[in-house]
Image (cartoon, rainbow, N blue to C red; front, side, top):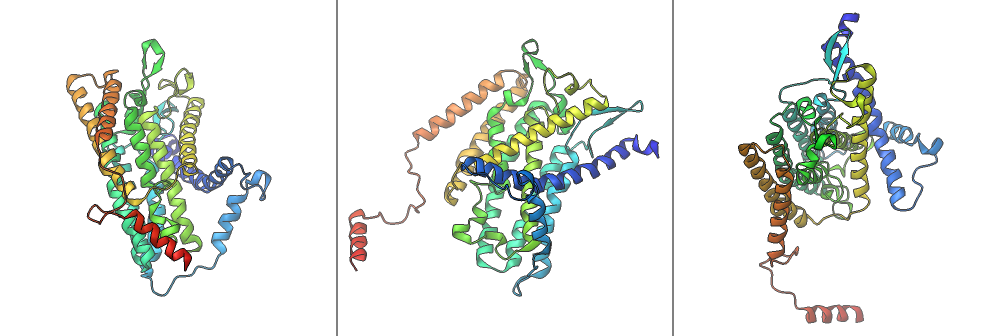
Length: 406
């Protein structure tokens, strides 16, 4: 039995159980922290009634969802209607398998990876699994047999397809720079230092623009404000989940928060060195003891928590985009920008300069070119179709005055 728990398979099985257990609680408490951050942003207290500091609020919310009457409307496609939230929830959780949490652990004289699975295509695995999440939204919208839900599903499909392109290309920039798709190897490639140990070799210092684009597209993929057009309550009542209630409704949002944690972990690995923290001896690749593993897990969790805080902070700071602005940002802004960064990364790779400060300089040049092209465009940003007749302002004012007088 001891031999099983000290093998790589035993560590992976044990870690998978622990990760799933912790994530179930973390996803529930993400709602609590979101409400606390909303209260902080709006000068309120947030939840503070259930338990000390409101810490039992997620327990009360979970009990409410479990014991609410589960109503399935008669006009829905019942099998797909039930399957859609389950799919979104499960997909969000199985993507954690390839995340490296604690580096290498020297256990009973054997080196094991503190990772559920370490596939050679770990990055592609996460992208492929997370890409299935759109089917949960689209299936739920279609199965609801409701026009509001259907429009929400259409928006979701268009949005996710549009933003997966810059998301994938921004990740390709890092793959071209590092030359690896295994997440553990990407982490190890960032454990060096520049300038005699003054600056860690994190990819954020080489490609900051790619980080910003990946963060923005992760928000869009999770349907977070300002990209939550699929559930715009002012327009679509509830969007794709209009017909859902009780625990099926809750599964959609648990899946959303699980995806936020996944994307935050992936951002931490790709740009912030994963479990690595400079100048901390227990967070270095050569530290393989139990204390070092626990410290590395703590460092990784701290980076994920900070990314989650930014996502929640932005929700209560920025207004929602119009749908035409959403599409314009993807197709006329982020996609050309990421293609420019990818060309830069491939050029530097060809010249053998992919891990030098020429990458940062290239990012600055790409941004300057983008700003110049944007400033030189004289096309007016408007939601109106270009083939519509011009609006006569005087006639509009006269019509409003007539309407007011009557």
